[in-house]
Image (tube, rainbow, N blue to C red; front, side, top):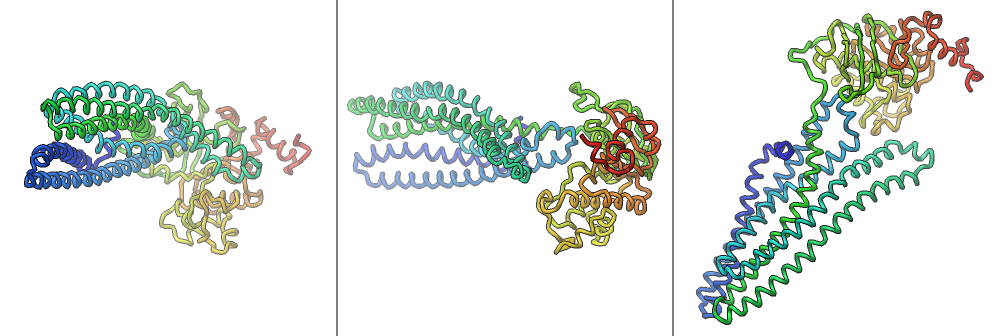
Length: 583
């Protein structure tokens, strides 16, 4: 995991190397200063040697300046390396997410991906910066200060050594118990983000049902769960302070007492005692830094694992070695097709033994009860999922042999959940064709019966669409999405219940435009409304993942019980909707 995350340092590697080098320089200069201070006191102040004081004082200033420069450069290079790592992590994660198939996306929730791209990356960034600066500085300072203390007086230095061992045991026991609690926080962040995302995206529903109080309560519970975890962990971490202070003051008292006795018998000088006290603080503060580094590293390790999961996730759908780069026509053949979600984990088939032979240019209606796998069936055509058994052929070639981009450019899909993006209407339409002229956009909108309402808008095709298309109606959104799909000039057009929000007259006009304007395009229309598919060349009736019937409207009325029951429930058998038929 660490190697995978650190691989993203890439072009910032030089800064990652320079940072610890600068920190070592700063530590070296800091360690020289107490030693020089002892010389000033013993050789200068006590002996009244002003030249020595000036000379050593100058050395101290030079050491301080060099250490200051090393600290500044270490901070700058550390910031460049850590922010560069964060940038590359987000970029690599986002790029990899774009390659995910639907089955890959199913393994991560949207809120989890947002947390990984934000909170988790920030944790890794902070830990990396601290590691570059403090993980090198603290051990170096600890070792050098300990060595200098032993060099000055081994008897007093043993006090440090005992204190370091005892303090280390206590602190790392505290940190070990706290880090296990910190690990529990990240799934809670996912729940918090999910609560916010769900509430904001469905704010109209929340207000329509006057559920603001319940939503606030849900958010507060998610927020409280994170609060409780961090309070629990921080209570343990907070013990570091009192333990550290007790140890520091105990060491100072012992060193002062023993040092005073040694000075009285001339085994130690006053200057040496002053430098030993300075090294005492350096040693114990370095240990405190190390303990906090372990907290950060443990928190970031949990984040790093979550980031590595996204980086290492490989798309289930890959281009073949020598992909086909052209879709000849819109013919579609399903041959003994079976499909299950999470097939590798024993998922049950949702489609079984599907056999279809659809000619290019045909209009195919698909109907069936909710959960009969209508959307799954058409998802296999553009290879949003791969079949588990059998094959799907488009233009006479197995979809697994095509270049993915080529195949998906030849298959336009208007999904059940229509999605518009912030930008003008023209911006949204040009998702179908980047360089489409305004006239091409207007033509597509006329076929989708969208031109009529766009023309009435103040800014026409330059009208700004809010994020998610919140400033247009459901029917308008559907028609814009259909127009966007038509701009791709596809071989195959799939409408997945994409006219459910438009009135029947508009629905009929859209289907008429399809017949006259794009007769050579194979069209799949999934609908619950019989009127939307009754004039299709053939209609497929699905029932629990099986084909229950296939034929024209008239043929199915005679031969298929499911189709006949739906037709009669919607029209009363007369072609008109009869309210008395509804319980």
